[in-house]
Length: 163
Image (tube, helix red, strand yellow):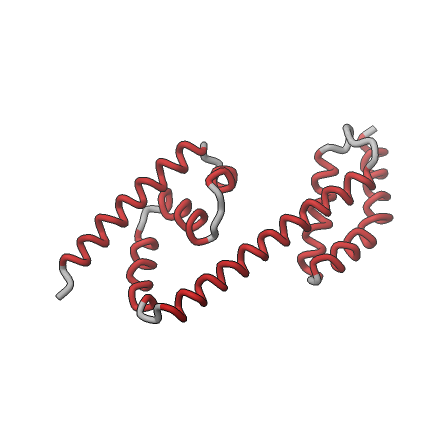
């Protein structure tokens, strides 16, 4: 049974992967990303192999969802770059303060630093941070709060000691 299942999966991969990866390539305009998406679609299919009735449809729907996620991520990155570019153009002096904030964030314990970087720097919602870190949403919120409090204290201290 397992051997025939493996053979069927192998034959399906050989038959559909090149076309699926090519389709993804046209959508994302990048070979590496296209192959990652096509591979991930097959990985998800394999995880549900016994419950999927139409593997080809499952692969294309999954790949389309992954492409959409990729486009959203790229748009978030473009917005972040535009926002940073606009802030630097409006307030060039802000660059001077950035290294100290960056150093403060880097000095946070990893448990607090990772949620800060994902939520505020990568612009991810708390739910996504929760999934990526494997922590409950309430824990992520508590960690973000604790990190903000630590940063607030450090910033207040550094401002009090400036000439």
